[in-house]
Amino acid sequence: CKQDQKKEYDHQERMQQAAYSLIPPEQKQATHLCIGRSILKSSTEIEREEKIFEIVHQMNRGLEFIADPSERYELARLNYRAGQKARAALAYRAACDYFQIARALLPADSWIHHYDFTLSLYEFSIEAVYLNGNYAEVDELADAVLKKVRALPDQARIYEVRMQALAAQNRIRESIDAGLAILKNMGVAFPER
Image 1 (cartoon, rainbow, N blue to C red):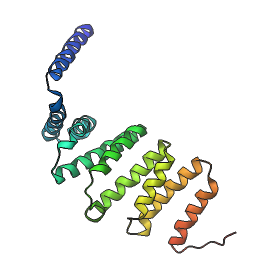
Image 2 (cartoon, rainbow, N blue to C red):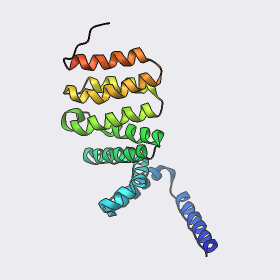
Image 3 (cartoon, helix red, strand yellow):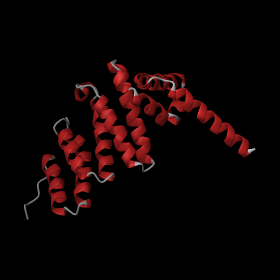
Image 4 (cartoon, rainbow, N blue to C red):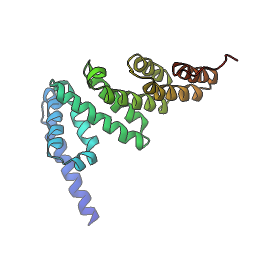
């Protein structure tokens, strides 16, 4: 029975590959986008969560054909969710990729009109690149976020991850200095020595 199922699966796989090879190269990205849109539209909220990787994989392959700002924002949110799910599965490289695509899809005014989502996306992005060992990108993203945050409490998570990244590189003094900087911004001062 399992051997018959394997043969059937192999047959279906070959049929899909044959059909895919018939699509002209210039139409493949648009086809992926259509497939992603179709899966998204036909899925319930629960099914969407289960199929999140398939949906974003298809839609990301055709994202250059998405001109509508609201659809681009929706795809950013889907990539954010896929990134969270990848991070929870300890797939940090994949999480970084999803978060990077989500950031690229944000509108230019996202820090104004979508502040909470944008902050959360950057917080998860910084944590994912730290967990993936890309410390230079931690600093780059953290610097960008710290220029945009509205309130001191929003800075705390950014400084926390930055401090962890510095400590992971055995840059303990810099990690302590980063912690002291956020405390100073919050009105807590410590003597220099």
